[in-house]
Amino acid sequence: MSLIIGPNLLYSVFYLCPHKANLNLLFRMKFENILEEIDGFGPFQIVILVLLCTPRIVLPCHFLLNNFIAAVPPHHCDVSTLDDGGLFSNLTYQQRLTVSVPLREDGDPQSCEMFAEPQFQLLSNSSDSSTERPTLQCPSGWVYDNSTFTSTLATEWDLVCGRKSLTKTTGTIFFFGVMMGAIAFGFLCDKYGRKNTLLASYIMAIVFGFSSAFANSYVLFAVLRFLTGFGLTGISINSIVLSIEWVDTGHRSFIGVIGSLAWSVGNMLLAGFAFLVNDWRTLIMTVTAPLLLAVLTWRWIPESARWLLANGKVERAQFYLDKCAKFNKRQKLSDKLKLETLSNIEMLEKQDRNYTYLDLIKTPRMRQLTLLTGIVWYGVASTYYGISLNISGFGLNMYLTHFIYAAIEVPAKLMIYCFLNIIGRRKCQAGTLLLTGICIAINIFIPKGQWHVRAVVAILGKGLSEASFTTIFLYTTELYPTVVRQNGLGYTSFMSRLGVSVAPLILLLEDVWIPLPQIIICSVATVSGLVALLLPETQNVRLPETIDDIEKPRKKDTSSNSVETSGVFPESKTTTDPQQQ
Image (cartoon, rainbow, N blue to C red):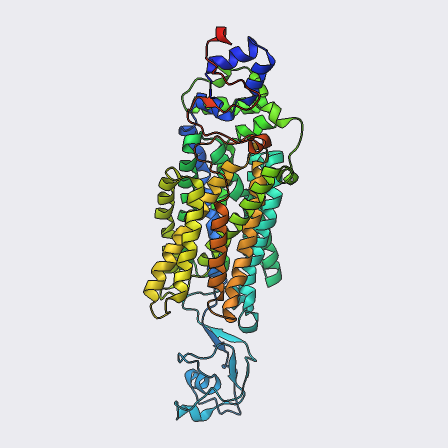
């Protein structure tokens, strides 16, 4: 049975009827009841969303930066130093190239080999087979085509041929940093608050982001990229949680989806930045610079009142709640409720203890939730980045492919917003993953000559994979209780970054068998989509506050003025008349 809660009831229950059952009723009140009094979706929430847009725009610029800074331009062995007793002195550079470097099947020079001895007969007989001549590895380095990039990691440190895997490895190292940051910030956010750790994330990302642009060795660059990823994780998990924890139940999906459009904007901007800035060092500084603006606007971002109440910081919580009420032109909460009332609403959940990652596996339902969400997050991230990091092979240049991949995310997000409120979170999560797997499977069998068809299917799959990513952020925030929400997001973010870290290495398997990476990504998407069907539905369900809310079945929020009952409450309605309490 639902219990109708009004502002007058809160005061009367606590002060007029200190009966144990009434106090239990007060303890069971959820944060949404407080939020409804001050408007759970007003100008205050919109401002939070806007303030967090800048750092969200930076995230995809760094997460997908490897597509451009680690690009390998066309290259061949350097033959400019060859001088076989003056025989090369009368030859043009192109003629030197002809007699020194064998050709591939497409007519371009080989990238990693040259003839052991000059083949001067090729100048007069171009049809002579050059593939059977003895060859050796490039002794004098390589010459790179700088028409697209003036400088990349590959050209800076010759990460080609036998060292070409190191370009992909930089992406893996970055995401290992993100993975470690997810664990660290998941703990720190729940212990020290969302706002303080957000500032720490800004500073770390700025310092290590700019420092990596001045790295003078590959090893130093890899270390600094690891630390940059570590810092950026705090922005990723804090921005979504701060947005969701300040809005009411009915607008969570709107805030989650619309807020994530900043990612798509940043993704599209990355294609433009990379097109205009062809030097990898300058490009890193360009995509890091917006965080300076984020630091300047940080002071206006409010701390999560949910977290403050759950940790007994009642006066600070009241300050932000009153600020929200004033901004939304509602009556201040302090005029209706005393500090003691606010304290008793959430202090039972705190119970003078600190929650850790162990709380995610101590109880049966939490353990099941932790296992399932970890699998789904791994699948979502591995699929999304497996597609996003493969932006070649469809007959389009890489800038245009990246831009289209990013642009398709916008209609995908708007579409998923509609479906989230129609068919629910669980079906959206499972459906988008399964459809992504189907798109990848179809592309495996489409001939490479039909690049336009492959491009359309790949872009559709990219949109669906982004829809699944948008859903999982909102879905996970609704699944985990407030007291361990950041720990839960830290753990799931760790699992997702594990999937992302492996994605670049999976793409290297095309050297073993070309379809193998696609088969692996397709399988991961399908399995994680099926696992998502085992998760509970959270549509129109209030955010859980304690672990007990997970262990006990929750009811749908059918009224904006109702709270769920549990076994401790009698099955009777409670009116707002104090005389009937």
